[in-house]
Image: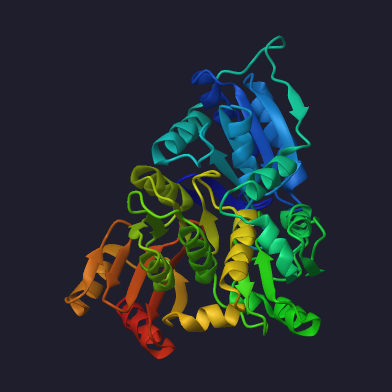
Length: 448
């Protein structure tokens, strides 16, 4: 599977050390051609990560690129390290939320943002056509950076949006599930520095996921039980590469990943000084209306972008947005860096809880309620014909065709698009009731 900013596949079948080495070499050659032959390398905790890390180092060194190896770290830590080291590129070995059999390459540009379609295409072309290799005297070097996580946490805690003294005074009790990914190396440290008590599961960083790794409600049963049994104030779960954050309330009920971004938006807008230009909030086309409501309640203009972090990041830059992200639990604060960042999300969620002085369930209950439903089917249908049939079925809807087809009404919407990470078609709908959302999806699927 090839997306805007990289590729992913099943280890040993689609993704091999040879392929990783070749594409790493292409990234190194691309960075070198732009005058910055330094590449930051990081990985999540997947069992294939070390193997692919060695392959990537060999590929990068073979084209004369120097490597800074971070080891097992969150994806946003790599993005920040690219900027810190003024590197020409970053390479992250992670399949994010995909099942345990997968791994992937994510390509980062010198600005710490995932490569856009044009730059990604240039790297792929180099991988396919071949690139000049260094001789014995021009082979790149490797050095270790053991301080990347510490720098990341220091930057988060120094943000003016985070009142560390207020958060510490609350002595929050947080239940945490890191799914045995890279989160175990960073989130417990962050919670400790914010004065939180912690009950945790799956902190080991060995990549042996005890459940499906995507932090969606159906995968958070163990976290929900931990919240109830420990009496925690909130439950938090991260995905394997720690760029997405999901929540449960104090009763252990999952409240949906969209609320992560909604809470973060309220925290940032609520702490903004009075005056100045109207702030802008950016989210993708599949993000819940709860985020749009949070933006409007805070006096912000709300902008939607196509799905994909690179697309959201481009829109954030173009709009000079104050905050943005995706409804999958990804929070982006440009003041920190333009990338989804779960440690940032953790701090902003605790900030909002501290300022609101309410339980998570109370904050959720105070806002308009919507139900979001997601479905998928194999990618076999003629998408153009499907989109045409759907638009004819709903002629009164507002259409957006930048990323598949999104139809919207005042209080509901449906989005049909091909996945960028799996060979499927995704159907996402939101409405005031689950039955209404299910009806939208059923109608669209019935037209396939």
